[in-house]
Image (cartoon, rainbow, N blue to C red; front, side, top):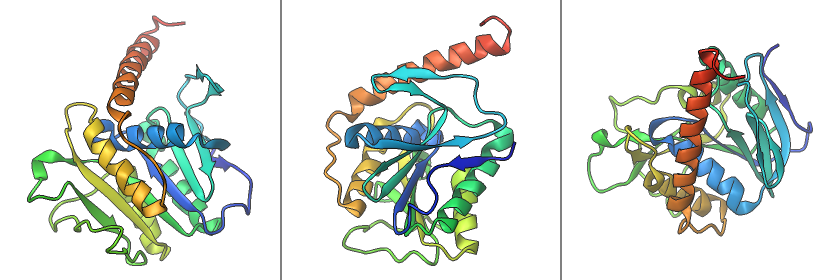
Length: 233
């Protein structure tokens, strides 16, 4: 089964697509989860794959599946609760970019982390925009990623697809600790999204929220390891 986005067709014109993945410092995932939770965004669709992680869980709102799509106003959020299977990671990224272009989204904001070891200067983050994306210096006063450094993984694939499709998109990359979950980096990403999308989001509770997420991720890793070893049924 190819990757499919199961969401209402023709309902996302002029929306902003927000996406982040499980990368350096879990920055994208923590920021996305926090935004969905804080905005009380409504689930409007799912991402279906052949090798979807064989796990679900429950929240106060009901069953939570691995890959879901949420919406609050004109902000549409792709939330990957679990890291995709390596064999499908690239396909999910390409399909997501194609979906945004086909559905005539206005733009896409992509959240990730940049290894803090590359930090040079006072700025807390860097951006990587497509040529079709024209940053508003009043809202996004963040320098470009230095030449010689690279974005990799799903964000790189989406940026490439958006560039080919002449679609406005920008990756927002706070410097993050590559050895652990980094709520500080996630808070920078959240504040940037709030400024760009004119959202009223406080990051005061994000550190405690991130600790809960980190404990949950540790538990999922243990369960996944047992499952692979045939010890969990």
